[in-house]
Figure 1 (cartoon, rainbow, N blue to C red):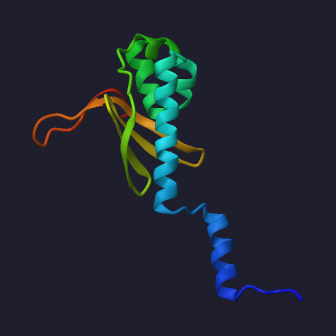
Figure 2 (figure 1 turned 135 degrees about the vertical axis):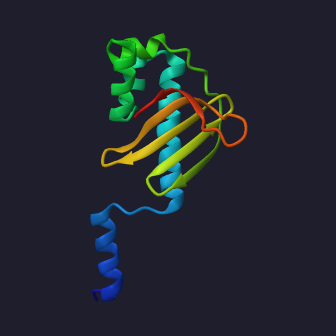
Length: 136
């Protein structure tokens, strides 16, 4: 005997598959994983892998400022060893992952989460974060 899903459940499942919807915890886990991937590449000095984790505007800004390819420019930056991830905040398609010695900002693209800013340190008062790597 074949069981049938109620129509509203079948439609919801179909829409979730089409829109790529995810739960808040899935978005948080994916953003954390992307930030960790970037941090591990930096720790290992794998600048090509770290560059692949950057958002397009962040990569372009780094190349223009360093007047060289992304891996060469990134290798010249004094980026901290991020340490352990402490917590992740996700707001829509934006995320912030706070590590022990770094804060990384990300945005969600069709290809997944990409780093928009890194090497960030919180400033006093209401001042924005100061970041070594950032996009426009």
